[in-house]
Image (cartoon, rainbow, N blue to C red):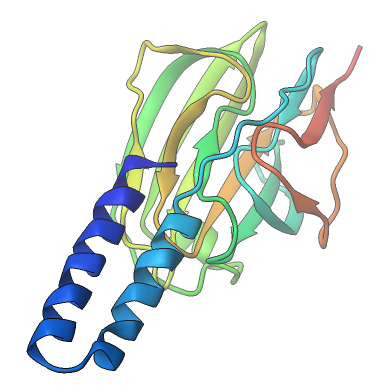
Length: 200
């Protein structure tokens, strides 16, 4: 459980108690339902992390695009709805060599233009002769990107690195040394789903 979920749930429950005391208990029901939803939304389950020369998904969600980029990389875009786990994980082991936050719009995260136009945090991880870039992208509802690492930190594959609150999107860019293993429409899980394998 992410700590924020407990804070939100306690605040909503306290608000519900006040509403029930001042008015009628039935009027507190929406706040109590929201409190339960926050506990569900901010869940953070343990995951089995695959080993070997693979890249794992940095987010739970549906693969909405697998597209070549002008720089010679392949972009995998993952859309997270409000029912997905929103904790983000490192796709490969290595050192964080770049963290760049960019302000932007809050378009629906499932749309293609969200990759370029929405507010986002771009993270570069380098290790074992390869470099992987992933972007935490805000959505229509998600307006809070959390990243708990900094440049110079070393991360393990599948290690928790942050989260995006509520509906959002995560893009991953992989170079030609990676064989892409996912296709649009597939559902992936952060840390446990292999999205690419390093070529020999």
